[in-house]
Each structure stands twice: as structure tokens, then as C-alpha cells.
Image 1 (cartoon, rainbow, N blue to C red):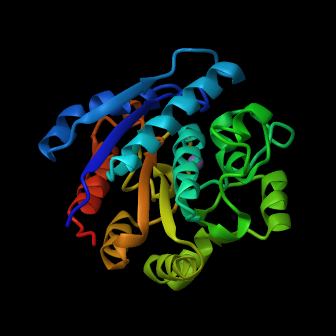
Image 2: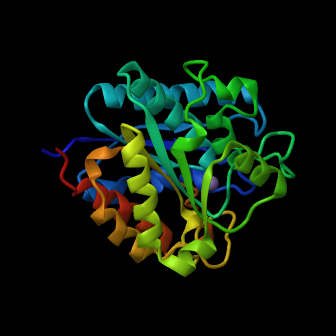
Length: 286
Ligand SMILES: [Mn+2]
């Protein structure tokens, strides 16, 4: 049986270094419609870049929306917006799983570690902090969305595709023992091998696995429309092939972030989003 999809948009770009990512959910309305999907809700963030109180309210709303999608036995897909929306998405998923005594594992595909705290971040941009926040480090008002617990344990999150990072965030992740597959691991061993290894490892230790995708994790040849483009990266076609091979029953939610059509008039990057959604949509669930 296929799970029905609950699609929501996180129209926010205030936490990134460039504007434009917040337009993505609206831009994709028609394309999603062609896939038979409607956005159940699009959350628009209209407040200040570092207004933590407003951001907290915004992430709480996303978290509750994701939770209610799960309570309706649907599969949440969140389309960003900048990657800060992950703070809302995975706070909701983690809380709902813990209400059912289940543990969350995550695969985080990204060029960056997103593991800064306000103390280590050179830019102060909150889209560079969601991994640290979900692990329980950073702004006090953002680490305790819905409940006070850290949303994910360090041993249950694996980063893939990393190729641009600062010392402070790498130090935090190393200290916590978070597993990281750098881009050179992918070059050396192949994306499929690395992705499968990560997925199999989590499958044996957690109940459910969430997938958070930053489009800048892909090679800019495939996804040029991102705010912080980094050379090289994951081959998009290999990513799609790898998705077909995993035990999809374990996947609990999907998030795709940082698409910015202002940097990609060709529309390629928007097509990456619909391709991933269409791939996940068509997989069979038990
Ligand atoms: Mn990111």
C-alpha cells in the first residue's frame, strides 16, 4: 500500500545568506499538481533574519504541521526554503516518533555540515546551524521546539557529501562522534556504496530514517540554483538510483531545501526537487 503524501512548503530565506529560496514552494505548485500533489500548507516567514522569537514560532508551526501529517498516517514531505526549516521539520518528526516509542535516524545530504552554533558561525546565518540545533547545541529557544529533548542523537545522524566547512563545526561533530562522509569518500567509493552503507548502518540501530536534502549537496551541474554553490558534489542521477535500492519502509519523512530559482533560469534545480518527490511518491510502502 502506498502512503499518502502530506506536502508542505517552508517559504523562508531569512536564515540564508541570499534571498530567493522562499519562492520555491509557490514556484512548484503547478509541477507538484502534475504529480497529483497539493501543498497542504505553505508557511511564509516574514520577519527579521535573527529574530529568534519569531523563528521559534515559525519552526513550532512547521513541527506541528509535520506531526499532524504523521498522525494522519501520511508521509511528510517538506519543501524549503533555506535549510533552517529542518529545525521545524525534524523537531516534529522526532516528537511524533518518541510519542510512539520510536527512534529517529537521519541522513543529511549537504555540501556543508550545518553544525555551527552562534559562537562558531562566521556569518551568523541560521541555515548553517540546523544540525547543531537538532543535536541540542545553539540558540536555547530553537533547540527545545515542542519538547526539551535533543531531537537526534549524534550516533543516529550521518552526513553525506560534505566539502565546505569551518573548523568550529567540524570540531563539534568530531567531538560528538557524528559520522561524516566527505565528498572525497564519494569520489573514491561511489555514492551508491556510501549511501547504502549509511542507510544499512542506521537501519540496524533506529526505527525510522529521515532524509534531509540540501540541493547544494549535488554537483552544480545538476542543481545550479542554490545560494551557496560548491564545486563538485553528488551526481544527481546516482542519487536517484540509490533511492530506488533502499528499504523505503524505514523512511519516515523527506525534506528538500535551498532551491533558489533566481540562480537558475533554466529550471534544472526545480526539476531536481520534483524528480526526487516523484521518485519517493512512486515507491511502494508496506
Ligand atoms: Mn544545508
